[in-house]
Image (cartoon, rainbow, N blue to C red; front, side, top):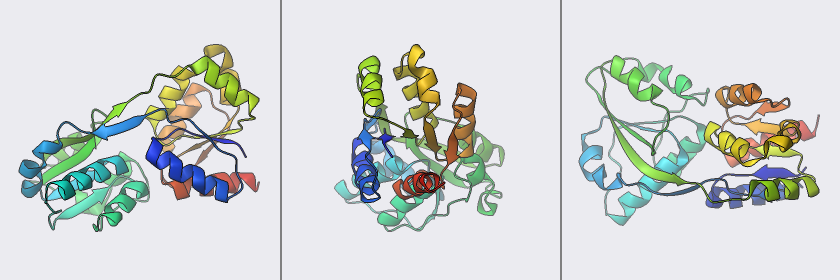
Length: 244
């Protein structure tokens, strides 16, 4: 198959290699890049006070871990949670065992038994700049004291959507690997409106039911939900559809 890989460069390179190993011919076009967040400098103040750390993406874990290494700090011995398997894997790479729900959404995380009784506990949420606030609002309603740390920031490269779309069509693009609602929205903004019916007919692999619902509402007709946003999960989902 000829899938489109749109995740940030470092993760995209690994995914492209994995797809090629399985016989696919991926096209790589990162729609988003990540850089160190402006609030990392607050970690020496926030992390030692936390009882619980929650990471909403692998980028949040990776940038935090890099900052800790650079500044000679360590992760404290507290409770760690990851929204999805990719974030849990990033924690594991940093030597941290994090709890992770089977449902890779904020809703799945909030349903974990360990996060039901959190009154008085101090929760630090590692995330990018902006994003959903469901986790913070819900835990605060359960009595937790919640703080954010913007561990990374998103930047969107300037791209020529019309030229890219013509290139994708010419090379036989047949599938899309989209790892977040944000990337889905960025792709929709990039592709000219007259080309969107073509886009909607591509096989779309997404990491969660929430992103699938967004895609269906936008007009996509061939959607499959992977077991999370990891490169392995995306490849497995594409492989499963190839065998049908």
